[in-house]
Amino acid sequence: MKKLINDVGNVLSESLDGFAAAHSDIVVLGEDRKFVRRAKLKPGKVALVSGGGSGHEPLHAGFVGHGMLDAACPGQVFTSPTPDQMVEAAEAVDGGAGILFIVKNYEGDVMNFDMAREMSVREIQTVLTDDDVAVENSLYTTGRRGVAGTLVVEKIVGAAAERGGDLAALKALGDQVNRQTRSMGVALISCTVPAAGKPTFAIGDDEMEMGVGIHGEPGRRRVKLQSADAIVDEMVTAITGDLPNAKGGSCLLFVNGFGGTPAMELYLVYNAARLLLQKREIKVVRSLVGSYVTSLDMAGCSITVTMLDDRLAKLWDAPVHTAGLRWGM
Image 1 (cartoon, one colour):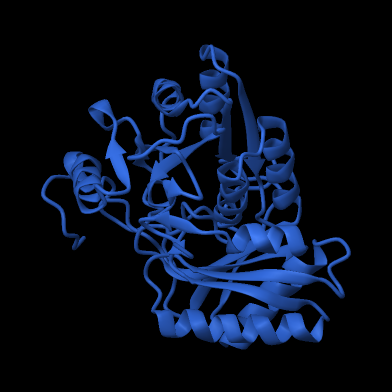
Image 2: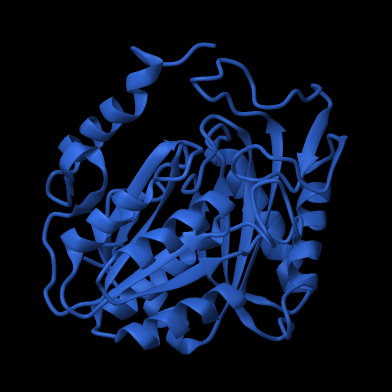
């Protein structure tokens, strides 16, 4: 294993210290590094709190800031944060209008965020993301996994919160965006968790894992490596086949790298997906390409499609200023 680390046990703490120092105009690191919060809080606003295992950066801490999250709780690599982290984060950012948890559908995350909600004296609602069409169930979830579509929910709901939306309305909006979002991923090379020191799964030079999860968990099947067009065709077919009434609609097309994929390849995938959506009479009106919901150093990518109306498109376009995503400021 070759990684830029000092000690396996200090990887997360040293990384968080560097992150907070590099973006001190945007974020503040909570006591004992339990959470990352906005440097400038906005009283009277519903506070958005998310989190999950580390290793997916910039998700979630990289999306703390104006127009997105108010706080994020980082767990150890691929491990859920603890309920006390979430409670303390909620207390730190509570502006008096309630708290909205945005939670990926993994058993540890769901259980711990639910426990935090029960422990807190604050008014808290939850949006659960489950956009992955690859599998209905896995070892990590009951139902579909929450993957890159989580970013889309955080961005759109974050914009509405910035405009003063109330807790009930933001919860409904988050659920709506999640219902209109589908994702699927493919892995070419496994990731390596520092504590493990070896790849999460073994895969042949001529193989790929179709439908992989963001922790390296298996997807639909292991198959021989194919051309990019063939890979994208299978992913887009699965996504559009699961989106109700997509034909004739407009969408956001988000091509996400898993950490070990060059931008050149991500844009090639984007172009192939765009042309396929066009053939299916789905118009791409907004785009995002880059490594935003990663799996450490895994080679591969995911495709996310979110069906948009005028309101959702305007919320996507609204100003955002975070370490990992920024425009319009």
